[in-house]
Image 1 (cartoon, one colour):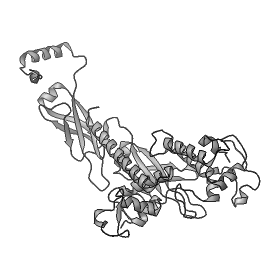
Image 2: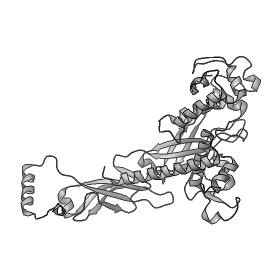
Image 3: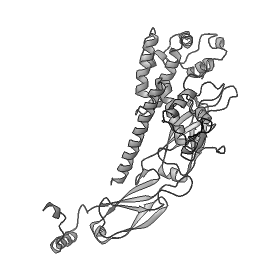
Image 4: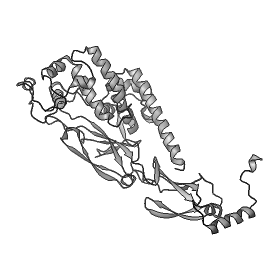
Length: 294
Length: 108
């Protein structure tokens, strides 16, 4: 199995006192706790730190870990003969040191302790494309330890920030125990066109100056193909046109809305003819957009 | 009551009793009870007048209780500190949601 140097993980010396260990853990917990940290690998780091703390704070576990001798972190090693057996478990290759401690001493405060053999709950964040969220999708999630893969159907209707509970799809149980539950935190990846707020979608719709002045029908893309949206004459930049029911579907039927956010754009390189027409327009118009400055 | 579903979205349609909530979130019973008493985790209005056995909670309450459990085990917080932390996190969540919502409305 792979050696884990719990002292190095917490950044404490081998002779560290209980108080040193607690202080080091608290500092790292503030840095990596998944509810607090914004760091990308916070979840993994926090698990490692918790496992180290769980082992070193408990005198019995600390002694057991010291009996393993010193190795490089990550190095393949065999526990001394009889080490695992004295606790009634096998120390086979490929086993995870943290799992063995858990088998020996039972789950700690982390996860679902107390229920004998019951697998732990597992929480994971899943990143879906907007299209996957709109139509529903199947995901396959590798559970840690390489023991199992959770296959889950994410139904249509979920959106960014939703949470799902999938009973029995968490970590496998030990000794015939039931598996834990899986909790999914749904995140929607940024989309090329749409911004997501709940089940509503926001789409920027750039308009040419004459489209804004004259109004008219404009083709816009939706999740189910293009539709014509009627832009009123005299529309303003930043104005939102609501298209009912064209947002993300809701889990129990119906759908959010699509908001077209209007903006006015001008040609970067107008032709001579265009410039002339604008010059004519400037002369012909009495419109003063800055009348309120007067 | 919920039928046993293969998957459940933790929204206002998801409902559990106090015992299930405690089992699903893994918080010690006394801690969870205190969070309810502090008003951090609220039973559904219709069930609030009854006792513990009558209380019903939504999926949102479960998500909140699980966060409380993570914070409790990670930082070894007592119930009043836990209640405060959970409340502040809820406020941050609400503010972040509002910022995202407003950002959506601005032409990108």
